[in-house]
Length: 355
Image (cartoon, rainbow, N blue to C red):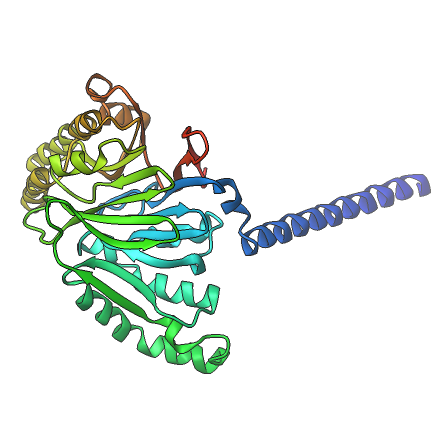
């Protein structure tokens, strides 16, 4: 009997030791991840590249894989954001600090492109302690958007300044400042030049949404182009000409038509109306592929994906015909997708920071 008790005691002690060791391992892992995020380890893989990281690859349609429109452009030590939809919340999840973002570029004012601007303002402020406002670039109307967010977050700023002190939370750092521009002429409009990076805005066709723009980012002989939300456009093709990567919105007409048909059968006239309306101011994957082919772009990334693509079969349907229209490499973005251009040899790589 005593021997049995000893064996049981040894087993219990061994179990306790294992659990204690596991707890130490978990703590070590957590501490390591915290340190990596605090020190910006994730960004090290983008050294000597011009890169785009998609933080929101979706649309207003709820999608567990794709948040509202948001992307980061990384050029040297500069981190810029295009649109500030709900994908803003994914940036920290990818291990990138929102405190690095000093410039945001809005394509237009649909809710899914602006609804997390206030959260960006607050997180940038808290993560950086910067004493100057976030610069928000966009077409005319940007002033109204920025003034609204500054007003709506006024109480929040006062609470944080009182709680943490203005030494930690400098008052100007919690604000945004609008840098509005007129709808660009045919040749485009340079809206920012800084540390070797040039950003050019160009008008696109998202009627009845007006104004609406896309952007071209040029850095050390390489470039990325964002279509913004638009119907098929020769303007996008013009500005993407010779670029390394085109990030283009895409809506699958056949899959959306399936939704329309079922909605009609189920007597959902509002859904029928909306799904019919959205067809004429977006671009299909094949049309986006034709734009990329005409611009001779080697990599095409589909983003602002409509509708959801929860299964692989739908992803295959989404890109049907793309390979026939386009000779380059292409991919469907989801939150966390990135594409990098090596500044030394021009090679293009892509991957995912969330999966």
